[in-house]
Picture (cartoon, rainbow, N blue to C red):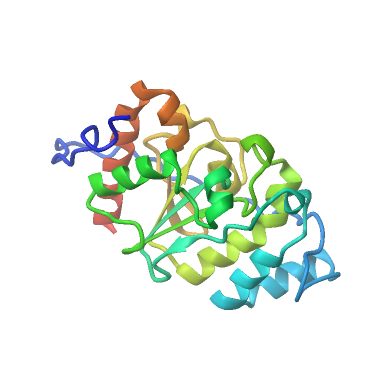
Length: 236
């Protein structure tokens, strides 16, 4: 699909940043239900509090065992995330697809190959100073957009991943990821080129790689977003 040659690092032209600050996101959304072991049958606040105290091994164990929403019924396995647990860069997508559901790792299909090419274009590599996660950890049927209650059930997991990582920059891949992180309605076209924040951590919004595979002409816009992300990281 012509992934590699389309993403070549060039020195960006000099000029002012096209970034605008955004207010902090709203409060943490209400979680839908209780999850399975070891926080099974606790209330929503108790569940979120228990997840907020977990270390990496316990967190990933709970993600794999979670039955807090209906997505667990059709999954083959949950997909916690992958990468460097001390990464400066965090990339957040929407949810696992069929191949991710099979292998238990995010972004391993064609969209994953494009994401790897995008990372390489700004001299990054999966697993090296990069962590990749999704807003929901189980595959939505037919790759549909996650329902609000599904995103809410998974939110404490993503929230804890961010707390443990303490990334310097978050890149939201697609509208669902951006809306989950910023807790507000987001339109990608209007959000591109702006600097948002999640609890003080800069957030940049761009297209999901799966969208770019269907809309090749927008790859140039995504390239601009990558350069913006690179400049933002360099300016910190």
